[in-house]
Image (tube, rainbow, N blue to C red; front, side):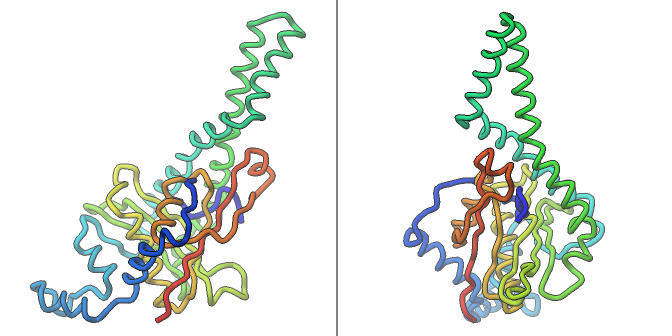
Length: 285
């Protein structure tokens, strides 16, 4: 996988033991089983539901929320690209703070200017060297995210309809609030040919900063899980870095489990940023 990884509003927290998440996972799986008794209750109790009754609990909850989730349309393109780019670049300051806490960074920031002072005898020169090192570290912290955005805009995000909506088994959704797109998520079969019919990969989860905390990200993830079950997949997988704390916590609460961790590139190993692969095993039909 590339670093930074794709899921987007995809951050580090301590992984909880599986037994502590059992009740949460059961609740999430129950939401995907679509019991007919609940739908019958909706038809019988809620007026005007009839033929317009939501086809699933996910649809029902979305219909009661101040936003709605629908499939991507070409008119959404600019807003979707803006949300994706902004969401990725938000991680640059977090990365910079992470790098500053590393022991090797402390040695560099202290030892570099000190060595220059001992060689030149100038405190001013040493101070300017320290500022230069900080500026360089800030640039390096932002660089991987900028490169990732540029790469994505040249690949799958270049033509979202072609990448996500041209073949069965994949899709792209947006969350809309008051006529404006405020969230996105996509899903594609994994690249491994032996697993394409088994695993669906979640990509590009992002929510506008002013609309976070409203359950939109959770609803988008549930949409992908429901789609995966309807399409006959057995698992939903995704990748996220240890710095994407909120996204990682959300996935764990919803029942995703860490199945792998690795450094995606030499840069990631150098600054000690791990990538986590998470898996959600769908309940049997």
